[in-house]
Length: 115
Length: 112
Image (cartoon, rainbow over all chains, first blue to last red; front, side, top):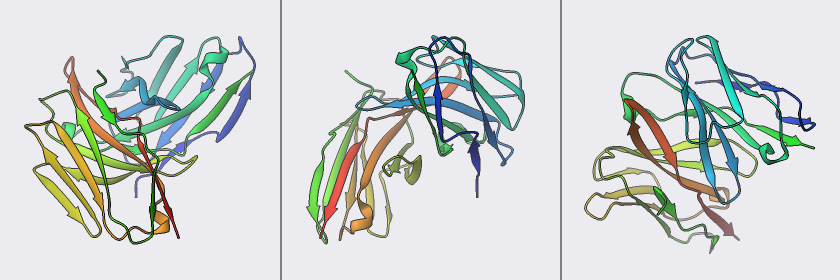
Protein backbone atom coordinates (compact mmCIF):
# COMPACT_ATOMS: atom_id res chain seq x y z
CA UNK A 1 0.00 0.00 0.00
CA UNK A 2 1.17 3.52 -0.80
CA UNK A 3 1.95 5.54 2.28
CA UNK A 4 2.07 9.33 2.13
CA UNK A 5 2.88 10.89 5.49
CA UNK A 6 2.43 14.52 6.40
CA UNK A 7 4.31 15.79 9.42
CA UNK A 8 1.41 17.39 11.28
CA UNK A 9 -2.37 16.87 11.36
CA UNK A 10 -3.03 20.24 13.01
CA UNK A 11 -0.86 23.34 13.10
CA UNK A 12 -1.43 26.84 14.49
CA UNK A 13 0.92 29.65 13.49
CA UNK A 14 0.98 33.43 13.64
CA UNK A 15 0.82 35.96 10.83
CA UNK A 16 4.27 36.64 9.39
CA UNK A 17 5.82 33.38 10.54
CA UNK A 18 7.69 31.13 8.12
CA UNK A 19 5.88 27.78 8.06
CA UNK A 20 7.18 24.42 6.85
CA UNK A 21 4.89 21.53 5.92
CA UNK A 22 6.65 18.22 5.30
CA UNK A 23 5.52 15.28 3.21
CA UNK A 24 7.18 11.88 2.77
CA UNK A 25 6.14 8.98 0.52
CA UNK A 26 7.48 5.45 0.64
CA UNK A 27 6.64 4.15 -2.85
CA UNK A 28 9.52 5.65 -4.82
CA UNK A 29 7.07 7.83 -6.77
CA UNK A 30 8.56 10.43 -9.09
CA UNK A 31 5.63 12.84 -8.89
CA UNK A 32 4.63 14.77 -5.80
CA UNK A 33 2.02 17.47 -5.35
CA UNK A 34 0.82 20.05 -2.81
CA UNK A 35 -2.83 21.14 -2.76
CA UNK A 36 -4.97 23.25 -0.52
CA UNK A 37 -8.64 22.50 0.01
CA UNK A 38 -11.22 25.12 0.96
CA UNK A 39 -15.01 24.77 1.28
CA UNK A 40 -16.77 25.19 -2.05
CA UNK A 41 -13.51 25.47 -3.99
CA UNK A 42 -12.28 21.90 -4.00
CA UNK A 43 -8.62 20.99 -4.24
CA UNK A 44 -6.37 23.58 -5.84
CA UNK A 45 -2.83 22.77 -6.93
CA UNK A 46 -0.13 24.92 -5.35
CA UNK A 47 3.11 23.34 -6.61
CA UNK A 48 4.22 20.03 -8.00
CA UNK A 49 7.45 18.21 -8.68
CA UNK A 50 8.29 15.52 -11.24
CA UNK A 51 11.79 14.79 -10.03
CA UNK A 52 14.36 15.62 -7.39
CA UNK A 53 15.28 19.33 -7.30
CA UNK A 54 12.59 20.01 -9.87
CA UNK A 55 9.49 22.12 -9.18
CA UNK A 56 6.67 23.62 -11.18
CA UNK A 57 4.03 26.16 -10.21
CA UNK A 58 0.48 24.99 -9.97
CA UNK A 59 -2.60 27.15 -10.17
CA UNK A 60 -2.13 29.15 -6.94
CA UNK A 61 1.62 29.39 -6.12
CA UNK A 62 1.63 32.93 -4.74
CA UNK A 63 2.88 33.10 -1.16
CA UNK A 64 4.33 29.58 -1.28
CA UNK A 65 7.57 27.88 -2.22
CA UNK A 66 8.65 24.22 -2.25
CA UNK A 67 11.73 22.10 -1.86
CA UNK A 68 12.50 18.62 -3.16
CA UNK A 69 16.02 17.64 -2.14
CA UNK A 70 15.25 13.92 -1.94
CA UNK A 71 12.89 11.81 -4.02
CA UNK A 72 10.76 10.76 -1.09
CA UNK A 73 10.33 14.21 0.49
CA UNK A 74 8.48 17.28 -0.73
CA UNK A 75 8.25 20.34 1.50
CA UNK A 76 5.84 23.25 1.26
CA UNK A 77 6.98 26.59 2.66
CA UNK A 78 4.84 29.57 3.54
CA UNK A 79 7.37 32.38 3.38
CA UNK A 80 5.36 34.82 5.52
CA UNK A 81 2.10 33.29 6.68
CA UNK A 82 -1.10 35.27 6.24
CA UNK A 83 -4.62 34.62 7.51
CA UNK A 84 -5.89 33.79 4.00
CA UNK A 85 -3.55 30.79 4.03
CA UNK A 86 -5.63 29.14 6.74
CA UNK A 87 -6.70 25.94 5.01
CA UNK A 88 -6.41 22.16 4.75
CA UNK A 89 -3.15 21.25 2.97
CA UNK A 90 -2.90 17.92 1.20
CA UNK A 91 0.20 16.25 -0.21
CA UNK A 92 -0.08 13.58 -2.91
CA UNK A 93 2.21 11.36 -4.96
CA UNK A 94 1.95 9.27 -8.11
CA UNK A 95 4.29 7.20 -10.27
CA UNK A 96 5.57 8.72 -13.48
CA UNK A 97 4.74 5.82 -15.78
CA UNK A 98 1.26 5.87 -17.23
CA UNK A 99 1.05 9.66 -17.27
CA UNK A 100 -2.52 10.87 -16.97
CA UNK A 101 -3.77 7.34 -16.29
CA UNK A 102 -2.21 7.29 -12.84
CA UNK A 103 -4.30 8.41 -9.87
CA UNK A 104 -2.69 10.26 -6.99
CA UNK A 105 -2.38 8.97 -3.43
CA UNK A 106 -2.93 11.45 -0.62
CA UNK A 107 -1.56 12.02 2.83
CA UNK A 108 -3.86 12.60 5.81
CA UNK A 109 -3.73 16.37 5.39
CA UNK A 110 -2.56 19.21 7.61
CA UNK A 111 -5.18 21.59 8.96
CA UNK A 112 -3.28 24.88 9.24
CA UNK A 113 -4.64 27.91 11.10
CA UNK A 114 -2.93 31.29 10.83
CA UNK A 115 -3.84 33.69 13.62
CA UNK B 1 -17.05 28.08 -16.55
CA UNK B 2 -15.14 25.78 -14.17
CA UNK B 3 -13.06 23.01 -15.70
CA UNK B 4 -14.86 20.41 -13.61
CA UNK B 5 -18.36 21.03 -12.29
CA UNK B 6 -20.36 18.98 -9.84
CA UNK B 7 -23.68 19.47 -8.08
CA UNK B 8 -22.59 20.15 -4.48
CA UNK B 9 -25.68 18.45 -2.99
CA UNK B 10 -26.24 17.34 -0.35
CA UNK B 11 -28.06 14.28 -1.60
CA UNK B 12 -30.04 12.86 1.31
CA UNK B 13 -31.18 9.29 0.58
CA UNK B 14 -32.47 6.34 2.63
CA UNK B 15 -30.54 3.12 2.96
CA UNK B 16 -31.05 0.88 -0.05
CA UNK B 17 -31.69 3.73 -2.47
CA UNK B 18 -29.97 4.20 -5.80
CA UNK B 19 -28.32 7.57 -6.29
CA UNK B 20 -26.48 9.11 -9.23
CA UNK B 21 -24.09 12.03 -9.44
CA UNK B 22 -23.09 13.86 -12.59
CA UNK B 23 -19.92 15.71 -13.38
CA UNK B 24 -19.24 17.87 -16.44
CA UNK B 25 -15.81 18.80 -17.74
CA UNK B 26 -14.59 21.32 -20.27
CA UNK B 27 -11.34 19.78 -21.57
CA UNK B 28 -12.37 17.57 -24.48
CA UNK B 29 -8.83 16.14 -24.75
CA UNK B 30 -9.08 14.32 -21.41
CA UNK B 31 -8.78 10.56 -21.79
CA UNK B 32 -9.01 9.11 -18.31
CA UNK B 33 -11.06 10.12 -15.30
CA UNK B 34 -11.33 9.31 -11.63
CA UNK B 35 -13.85 9.33 -8.83
CA UNK B 36 -12.48 9.88 -5.34
CA UNK B 37 -14.29 9.56 -2.03
CA UNK B 38 -13.54 11.91 0.85
CA UNK B 39 -14.84 11.40 4.37
CA UNK B 40 -15.28 14.38 6.69
CA UNK B 41 -11.88 15.75 7.74
CA UNK B 42 -10.04 12.97 5.93
CA UNK B 43 -7.96 12.77 2.78
CA UNK B 44 -9.45 11.88 -0.65
CA UNK B 45 -9.18 8.20 -1.55
CA UNK B 46 -9.46 6.71 -5.01
CA UNK B 47 -12.82 5.05 -5.60
CA UNK B 48 -12.77 4.26 -9.32
CA UNK B 49 -10.82 4.93 -12.49
CA UNK B 50 -12.64 5.41 -15.80
CA UNK B 51 -10.60 4.86 -18.96
CA UNK B 52 -13.19 3.97 -21.60
CA UNK B 53 -16.96 4.19 -21.69
CA UNK B 54 -17.38 3.09 -18.11
CA UNK B 55 -16.40 0.92 -15.19
CA UNK B 56 -18.28 -1.17 -12.65
CA UNK B 57 -17.13 -2.27 -9.21
CA UNK B 58 -19.77 -3.97 -7.08
CA UNK B 59 -22.47 -1.43 -6.21
CA UNK B 60 -20.62 1.38 -7.98
CA UNK B 61 -20.84 2.15 -11.69
CA UNK B 62 -19.09 5.00 -13.47
CA UNK B 63 -20.11 6.00 -16.97
CA UNK B 64 -18.42 8.33 -19.40
CA UNK B 65 -20.11 10.29 -22.18
CA UNK B 66 -17.35 11.89 -24.23
CA UNK B 67 -19.70 13.57 -26.72
CA UNK B 68 -21.49 15.46 -23.94
CA UNK B 69 -18.38 15.67 -21.75
CA UNK B 70 -19.84 14.29 -18.58
CA UNK B 71 -19.10 11.47 -16.18
CA UNK B 72 -21.61 9.91 -13.86
CA UNK B 73 -21.32 7.81 -10.71
CA UNK B 74 -24.16 5.47 -9.78
CA UNK B 75 -24.40 3.92 -6.33
CA UNK B 76 -26.89 1.08 -5.89
CA UNK B 77 -28.25 -0.25 -2.60
CA UNK B 78 -26.80 2.68 -0.61
CA UNK B 79 -25.26 1.92 2.80
CA UNK B 80 -24.83 4.24 5.74
CA UNK B 81 -21.08 3.92 5.20
CA UNK B 82 -21.43 5.46 1.73
CA UNK B 83 -22.02 8.86 3.36
CA UNK B 84 -19.13 11.01 2.15
CA UNK B 85 -18.19 13.62 -0.45
CA UNK B 86 -17.50 12.29 -3.94
CA UNK B 87 -14.94 14.12 -6.04
CA UNK B 88 -14.85 14.02 -9.82
CA UNK B 89 -11.30 14.28 -11.19
CA UNK B 90 -10.22 15.10 -14.74
CA UNK B 91 -6.62 15.18 -16.06
CA UNK B 92 -5.27 18.21 -17.83
CA UNK B 93 -2.02 18.39 -19.76
CA UNK B 94 -0.33 21.78 -19.45
CA UNK B 95 3.13 22.76 -20.60
CA UNK B 96 4.22 19.15 -21.03
CA UNK B 97 3.03 18.14 -17.56
CA UNK B 98 0.02 16.14 -16.45
CA UNK B 99 -2.17 17.57 -13.71
CA UNK B 100 -5.40 16.40 -12.12
CA UNK B 101 -8.25 18.89 -11.82
CA UNK B 102 -10.63 18.18 -8.94
CA UNK B 103 -14.28 19.10 -8.79
CA UNK B 104 -15.54 20.68 -5.57
CA UNK B 105 -17.38 17.47 -4.72
CA UNK B 106 -20.91 16.17 -4.21
CA UNK B 107 -21.97 15.39 -0.67
CA UNK B 108 -24.00 12.23 -0.01
CA UNK B 109 -25.82 11.53 3.26
CA UNK B 110 -27.41 8.10 3.63
CA UNK B 111 -29.90 7.82 6.50
CA UNK B 112 -31.56 4.78 8.13
